Image (cartoon, rainbow, N blue to C red):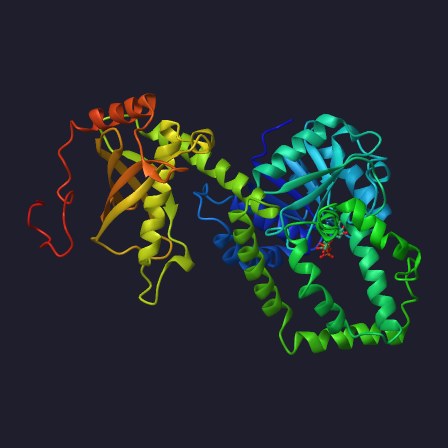
Length: 498
Ligand SMILES: NC(=O)c1ccc[n+]([C@@H]2O[C@H](COP(=O)([O-])OP(=O)(O)OC[C@H]3O[C@@H](n4cnc5c(N)ncnc54)[C@H](O)[C@@H]3O)[C@@H](O)[C@H]2O)c1
């Protein structure tokens, strides 16, 4: 299967727009096709709306954004795409017809996936050319922030197609959950639907309002679900004996009339109650306002989960590892002359990095130094294995000097010089430059101490690591020591460093 440089989208509504925003953000070009020409403006707006939240998701170095193009001709899209994602309305006959048409135009090594919420892949691939490259890839709204994508193969799907699709979705920061066997509704929508049917009954019977039912989730189980699903949570509910005890205690309730499986009739009065209830909950806020609120907390939750390396936070960490590794490969390739400082970070100042003066805020300078240090560590082999063996460098001192202003949209790069290395210490000197004119905007000098993390004490670094660091430092010593190195706070700008 192909390396995906261009994602083709068929259908550019809510879900097509979400796919576009995610793919473009992680450097994939997108060619979007829709029957309605007016959807071009819509998808461009959807991508712009997604950007602020996406930009806050990670500070790991990102590749240049992908380019978005639009067509009303599915043949044009199919001929240019390396991977095609279909997102047209949930109607079996329409999807079958359009997927068959796309498959006639797309080369046989281009995977075609459907975002269908519940149709099965065997039905959908029925009339396709090369149906073995087809599968369901069911995402969740907003696609640009929720990492889950359910992958479901049909009777004719080749396992290699599912594997290749998993790799692509992981590349754009998603958690690919491979569903073992096709069932209508896949996995997640079956679970959501069960809850949804019960909600409709409770509203219909006048037991609760939509707001009360949402409260019953958001103050309780909803908080647990972000990191541990129902099963693991119930295992904890069983106390020390876990799930076995839980089933013994609450098993009999399964026979009691706590839930109904058949959905109620969607009568006019039930529809009115649902609509009036949710309008009251929205309390005058527009869909756009609510979406922004939702996006902000989805970003924040994933960043919290990242600290615990659990659920969607583990997916975010894996994405960041990949982004840092890719940026490191590019940085390594740039360092042609070993006597020059290492060029370790390339970035663009994001809107949320600036303060009320519209200049990059202090803590973002530290963030860039941190990113440069992380890149250096990767380069010299300080990786997860080194850390889990109980060793790491801790930053014990930083001196930052501001020389210019970084504004929103400025491309920046960071270079790093290893001023000295000994058994336990590493002295670094970073320079933050504006890419456009190479202007020096800030310098940062740091002392890092090698520590035994269990004992929380300084200790000698591994001899091979020290040799690698010394080799870089020795090669760089051919250049004069930077004028700002060794300065103290308040020293006149042009006075030589002590
Ligand atoms: N909305 C959700 O929350 C959600 C979540 C996951 C999956 N899905 C699935 O994603 C798919 C799309 O849903 P949506 O909510 O984005 O729908 P939508 O109505 O917002 O968008 C559908 C788009 O398809 C276009 N379209 C219709 N016929 C077409 C054709 N023949 N060729 C090209 N474009 C055509 C329409 O113009 C429209 O822009 C459905 O299968 C749905 O089940 C939706």
